[in-house]
Structure formats: C-alpha cells, structure tokens
Image 1 (cartoon, rainbow, N blue to C red):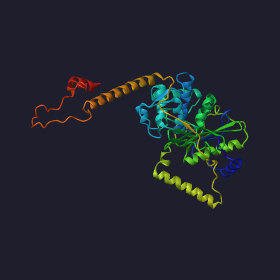
Image 2 (tube, rainbow, N blue to C red; image 1 turned 30 degrees about the horizontal axis):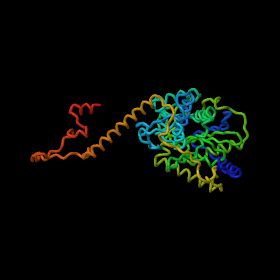
Image 3 (cartoon, rainbow, N blue to C red; image 1 turned 135 degrees about the horizontal axis):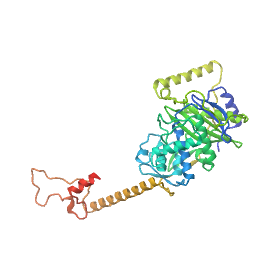
Image 4 (cartoon, rainbow, N blue to C red; image 1 turned 45 degrees about the horizontal axis):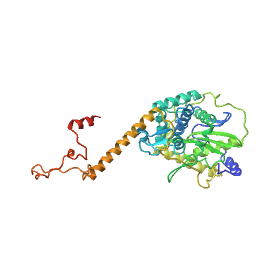
Length: 421
C-alpha cells in the first residue's frame, strides 16, 4: 500500500489506546493463514451483518466463476426489482448491463444494494434462489451461526451471522481465491468524471491494510471486516456493532496493531471454536440506541462523560491508529455495456427481450419521424369541431387511417386486443 503508517506513530497509537474497549459488540482477531484466534469477544453472538453480507455474495459469485457457470466478463443485468432497492445504490436504469467484474468492484467499494441484487438475480435467476446458494455455501464452510435471505444486507430479521462465521468467510475468500485479492483493497472507482471512494478507511491509512468490507444499518450498527499484511503475515480483524464510523475503524485498526505487535502464540483455530456465551439465538437490534433521538442523545452524553472523566483523571485523548491520507486515491475505472462473457440462461432470455423491446421502440420512433415528415405529429391530438356547429365541407379533420404514410389504421377490435396483451 502506497500510504504507510510510521513505526513511531504505530507505537504511540498502541500506547494511547491501551485499555480502550474494542467495540460495543462482538469482535475477533485471527491469523488469516493459520486460522489461529488471537483475541475474541462474543464471537458466537448473533448479529445483523448489514453490508458485510456482500462478502457472502462475492464468495458465491467467485464459486460460480470457478465452476464454469459464468466468467468475470459475464453480463449482470439490472432488473426493476434491483433498481428499486434502497440506497446505497448506483441508480442504474432498468436493463443496464455491467460485467460481473465491475459489479463486484462496485459492491466492495460503493456497497451498492441495487448491484448486489442484480448479481444475485443474474447468477441464480431470483433473490430467493441466490439466498439458497448463500446458505448452502455457508453450511459447506462450517458457518454454523448464519442465515441469509438477500444479497445486499438491508435489514431482515431472518438474516444474521456471527463474528466467528465472518472470520471463516473472510479467510475462505483469501485462501480459495488469491487471484481476486485486489477486489478488497480498491481505494476508489471512477465512472466517467464520477469518483467513488471506498468506505474502508483503513485502506491507505493503516500500514499494510489490504481489505475487506464495511457495513451499516440501524439494527446492525457499524461493522467492519479488515485485513492487513506485514512482513508476510496477514491478520484479520472483525468489529460488529460499533456505534460510529470512527469507532469501528479505530477498533479494527487497534486489534490489528496489537496483533502485529505481539508474537504468534498457540491457541484455538476458528474451526475449533465451540459456541459459547449469550445471544446465540437472538440478534441484538441497535436501532433504538443509534437511530432514535433519545438513543442518540444518550450515546452522545456517555461520550461527553467519558471525555470529561479522562480530563479529570489527567489522561490524554486516545491517539488514532490511522494516518492522514496523503495524495490522490488509486482509482479503478468501471463502465456499463461492455459484457462479453457467457450469460446465464435467465439473463440471456432477458437480454433477448431487451433487444426486441429496443428494436420496437426504434421502429416506433422511425414511424413518428415519417409522420412528422408527412405533416402530422402523432403526439399532438387532432382538433374536433364543436358538435353544435357543422364543420365546413372539406374541413373535417383527417381520420388517422386516411394517410397510407402513417400506417396506423386499427379497428376497435384490434385496440381491445392490444390492451389485453
């Protein structure tokens, strides 16, 4: 990574944040290569994943490529259902086609819900079928505390996971698909003149940071799966249920810094961990604390009280683990309409229909242009004479079918048939 955190700054940060809580919710720190757990807090507590869901979406997509169903250049089509998803979103019109390659870049950087749904529908035919794939892959990986119902992570009471399961998923993405590691460390995207910055603040601000994904909803809180590599050693930190963007970033960076500062020691692996602790069968909902006026005021009050207590005790404000970003972001370009790979059967059928609809619209436009050239604009209604005053002879408006050039003659029966189609 181009932007580095100096060793002296790192040591200062470790000292400054010693004893600070990692997060309001579960957290986990582990070695990505060995799976050895270095630190954990409520790793089996059920939690809403928010946009960390998109890591599972990406894993299923990579598996589809590996099996030969599609390639990274296969088309991902935006449906009406996908276009109607709530933000964050790209806002592409219905029928827009992008490559799977660009779609994954978008959901990793922009966390666009419309694109995530488009991936699911394009690969599996429907949201429900894609969710079934997500659950099957999770079960195969040994993610025992997760259940998925959508590809984007917008809130659903039936979509939940655990810090330990997210650790298994994140390590599987790195281990099984090293050729796609760059998707998780993108600093930003460019689309024409538009620049889309990554939500992952560790990228470019924490030494060795190389992934992975952020997430937020009111019920989930602020979530982050973060990875970093130093001297050939890759650590992963998972923070879920934090109460602010800054809180999740500093908590994850703090865990990683602590892990790199300590030698590796023997301990349980992710796979060997057994469910323990509270909250195993019901996910915590943070909406009341984060997204109501009373909850927000109470949270800010606790923060002010903690700051006042530190000042009273003569303690300095916690230092940051994150360096100031310097220089421009490395941007990766994305574009629409460039898919050249094989389409899934459901997408292929839709693309054929899209082409037919486009041809019909173009034919209708040509017909309109011919009508205008003949002296009649079909978009302007023909005037009617007052019923109490007969029209002068020869002055009656021409019937629509009188001009052969217009070719718009239709019987009442034809009109009714058209309406029924």
